Image 1 (cartoon, rainbow, N blue to C red):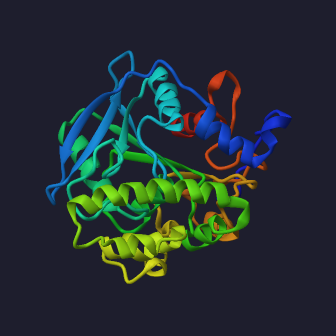
Image 2: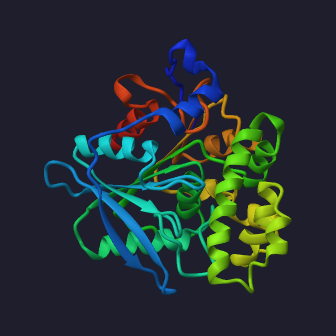
Image 3: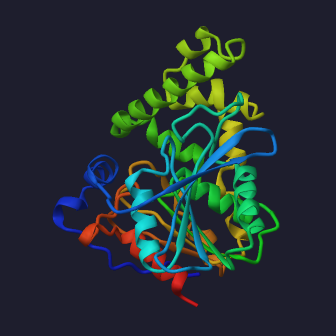
Length: 319
């Protein structure tokens, strides 16, 4: 489809990408969302925690919410989306990836940008209950890449999965990693690395022979983390092999469910390869919207409802 036009124009203060990003991640608060946790057991014996919030009236529509790197189901961008969808007649299932629900997962492996088998198990679990006739996916950053890869990589997508919205998507993981290693993103990269290493230390207690101290000391950048842990734990040759095989960019042309990507021009996490203009022009099911402002998972909006929350609701409600 042609590039979606956008009318998003926030107040002057939020036309700075870094301010939009930081406000969304560290300042914004969302109240009034009641979540009930369900733990499911995966095929390999590990577990995932799903945090459910419900519409006030019985609904056969569900949105599955997928968080970003080192996020969880309580982040404001997740609870904000859940609240908006709950108010409009959708139930919401917010997925905590392996090790992201406040408790270390039981396996050496964890989560990553291309772990679509876990998403498939979540969708199958939901369908087994035979409650929802319409399922929608909304992913943020890493979660957006995950949703798009799932839809385009050749899986048998159930008829109940109707559409997807992906926000601030690193469609090219290598390109995004290169951006995060630049001076402009040093504070974000430092924060991510701190959280990732803390989790790796927890996992080291379970698997000391697989995660020696010498390896952890070698981690100076996010790419080092992917070379030393992500690639080894998930059967990739190295970080670059992981980025190549798990980037959603290569799968976008084969997406058959209506899917909207919202990537802001001022998102400092995204390089030029993360804006799939060509793929959107070729695939009639793929929509791309590139607002001038928004930062990374920012998109400030009035009444504490972000622009991406309004757009996702509109997109899913459009026949």
